[in-house]
Length: 374
Image (cartoon, rainbow, N blue to C red; front, side, top):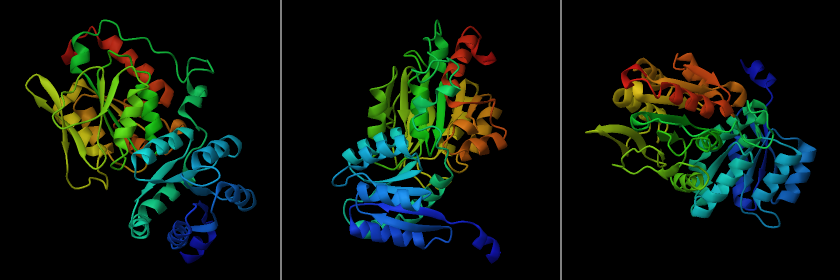
């Protein structure tokens, strides 16, 4: 086995951070892994640029706040001139969250949130998270730097719009109130979910979302989407009524599920143990969809690492829901969609830009049918 291990090339990483302590810690964390090595550590983007040229790394970790040129400017130039997998290292602050979301829009694969104080201990605790994300980044699909650049997948044939234009749902009536769209996503999912939501009309059924994201980031993410979408988007609060024309995002660090209360659906936001190593967990949300919403649910499994939610999505299908799964070519990471397909959970497997139009087409075509036949 050792011979085979030696034959496998290690993932080569360049660390970019203005803190000597952080550079040293990240280098040590990466070099402890048998399948990766830190080939260089740069204190600013200018040094990083030279290192990337000469060392040709597979992945870079990039600090957001640096002197001379901040991480966002550097990332923007990098993704334009020499696209490569990037894991952002951001501070766990409100501004850090805003800037991190911008980095994901620009094409960063993922991010690690470092604590404001106790950085050394904090980073050591995050060692597995950091190395997992470097590993995922090394295999991520980079053909989609912005989701909005994925026009090749769009059926509209236009180059200046993110997807085929979506007309509002007409005469949907009671169906909009009864139906609920459930979305599960992880790595690459912030942009994938945005691509779906911006194409939903204001009279869309309610949308309930679990996106793997740490505490402190989901509120900024919801606010960002709220400013871009025709529907209202907010972080879910326990007891919220689930209403048409609204999307509810699981708060980082809490599980989100849906319950019935009389004639209404309500959001349940609860603490608890991680499920499939995640909190929030897609499994928790999708199980509630199968149990409570049944044939009135529409499930979407988008890009992400691992298998969270795959079995529960199959339960949704068995309970009568109609499920869409993102195809491999448009995923940043195909793990969660692959597992959902393997579990037999998918009714349709589609490129990302076709999911919203197909969803709306289905809602229109079933709008005149009685609910028990949908």
